[in-house]
Length: 271
Length: 241
Ligand SMILES: Nc1ncnc2c1ncn2[C@@H]1O[C@H](COP(=O)(O)OP(=O)(O)OP(=O)(O)O)[C@@H](O)[C@H]1O
Ligand SMILES: [Mg+2]
Image 1 (cartoon, rainbow over the protein chains, first blue to last red):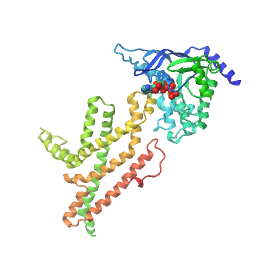
Image 2: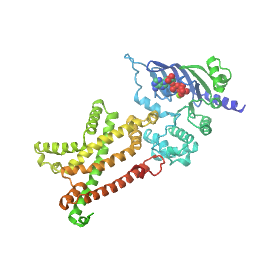
Image 3: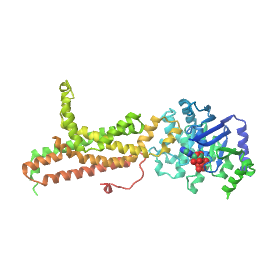
């Protein structure tokens, strides 16, 4: 199969590099409800990691911990050159992560959301230049050049002066990907980027993500598109009730999963 | 119907003065009231506790009392108490403090600050959280989120309601005729008392108000249509009058 030669080549690439993301013993709770129960994972630089699992298993929460939108209560996160240790103070409150670290981390890890979340009062170009100009301190001229480059990449150059309300879901998501790319991140996070799209629009977004995978971008991707995950990923993590039940290459996980829950999940998805 | 008085330059000048004063009152208190409204909303949404309570209290009191009472309170109450302050008669702002028009502007500004402030506060609450969270995810500081995303989005959302507020403001203007500001109603009353005509001067006032409302609605509608990111919409001018 041509697919499998495709990703084995990626796997070779990534093995030679240091991990871009490394998570150990990550615990996260909403109140007293523990959502993540000690996650250990690594992602090599330039690799694509897909996170799969049933609804409520903690996939989004895991991803949101990667840019500190949620604060874990325990564990260690190394990402984009920053190392963060999470801990609780004596009073049982989480010790807040230093503002500067949070900021650095967030400007180098960018996220693409299920609902696109473009800012409706900015044009396409405004959305893509917002973070470089107003957060990263890039000059307007350079930011526009960057924006034009990445809009071209996602095939949205011709809509640069349009407002998001005038775009289809697929187009909005492609702009959202350009917005994330324009920050020139070390790691990109995708939380079900195609789940809010009409079926006929899914393909155009997947094609963009596939091309990013081919460029060797480090990506963590939560998705229900199993065929796609299998095709582009170097690594699959199967999450079940806040723990990694199964992990490995797409072949390992999809063809001979050792965990029974993973087998059940895969068969329920496929049928 | 007898409109012959319209040709009298004496009455014309009263109506003209009333017309200008009306526009100035709306423009001045609309402008400063909007700034006050934004500050009010910010204080309630993001301010430290005591400031938030203060803003909430101000909004509740102003929205809970009649505008005419507020007008008398500022003009008769504060306007009469101020001269007791030592040296205030010599200060450069004294002419302002004896001016009924100033107290009209002050009262209306305070009123717009409360009503529009409540509208903006509500709109801020209705901006989808995920738009703000996205900005946060990209490392935007909370003040920047406020100025670049939250507030502009809130104004975009509540602009049609603010249009309604400003039209209500326009139609509150005749209240100032009670504190001796020459507005359109006062001009009409002068004509009425001298010519003993009951309806005609009032008809003119009504006609001018309708025209002003149409123009103001059109202006606001144009602003709404051209506000960044406005959704495509059909012309709704007449449906909203
Ligand atoms: N803000 C929150 N407050 C309390 N509980 C939450 C919150 N967000 C998520 N949860 C709970 O945490 C658990 C994990 O949620 P999460 O959104 O990470 O799941 P998911 O794997 O992304 O699911 P889905 O596939 O439906 O997106 C769920 O049980 C959910 O109800
Ligand atoms: Mg989710």
